Length: 621
Image (cartoon, rainbow, N blue to C red; front, side):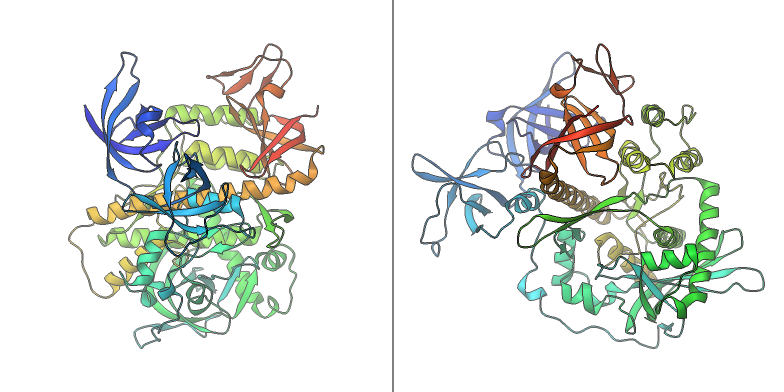
């Protein structure tokens, strides 16, 4: 049978063809010779054969579409001719390489470079000098992350001014709450005191990017290709150029900014009884950070910024508590996973700071406000038949529920989910683990077991949040999906009405920006691992407390309790083997010992591979 699909390349030289429109999401094996002409992500057509035991193989492959145009590698020569030794996660073979005429001097073998496919011929685009961070460059090229903006987008352009159709909120006390390092500030909040019925009003004001970036203009096309901003240990790769994201659109204090505001009326029990969405003009009274807001919320501490806004922050605390109560009634998880903050020195490329970022009451407040706004906009658009990229998260299958039960038990928690997991039961599990030292490790495993959410025009519940409908509205400077939602809201406010609430072209765009977001997440993760490996290189021989967060054929994945750095305990370093993975319990089992997910360990750092971002440990006791 003839099928089409997408190529994935295994570093060991073979590959797989993930079949398109296959209900079981099957993949066919591709042998190394058949894989040679293709790259990771290529769309191809192939002849698929199936063995009696159900295994698929692909042959006679032909290219339909090549999405990847840029390749990282090192220069090699075969019979005197230049070739690019391509990243083996992208191609299983070396590709012939040409140099443009301006490059008169030919580089030495082993020189790292980036090349570009032009009419399916590989042309050297730039050589990487000694100042380049080769490991980071490889990751960014592997995941097709753009590092620079086109020259025409770097010049500031005219921006719209406020008009009479906007509500003037400049006299409403409004604040932004972010990390101190944040420069692209796109959300501001305010809470108006409770009325005679006890209902208060939450105002979530979001930078009106759609008014400054028309659809299909050069800025928009570049943002659509990127899909999201990318946050690396040494820098941010913004979806929009810095003059726009960090300055002209950023909700800086004391500056008038155009926004879309979601106004929620919240009763004393936390229920949202009314929603209004409108264009506004906002002036932030202060730029606050999480730590100083948490100090006020938790201990009543004030400083020169929070003191004048004490009344507003007090009502924000009230609103946050009400929203938390309402969310607790329906269940779901508040995903505020702790993470490691890594600071990379620009000159030495060494990690100078490793600091676990623990979430505070201020993080919880902002997360609740943003989730409430996103939900409200999703309901508002759906009730009016307006097409938008909804964020959907499916209920886990029974096998995943069983796996979650085992994982929780391995960490020392009993769940009693039964055959079907509900959002309330999931919320109850989070209450059990919330204040435990192993909470970061549990949440990292829990998130993987629950699976990923996706963008789609077919509005359905978001299981992990326990939300009937959900979308992304609150970060249009950083995510293209949010900009699409802003345009949908703006079109309706301008009087446009839609015949088709689920247009096929928007659904295709949903799939594309979802892929870009996943690639960005992978690039961020891989670069954090490289930075962590560089840090751990200075701590070889030291011991650390850890938890097992994964059981793999090659060994144990562990997360350090203090720094949250992730590494591996190789299988051949474990005493008492041989070991095998028990498929029923997902444990690593040997003749005299078992290693389940969640098990606490004391490990010793033994080796690092900075290029691959790998840290190896062995059991200390």
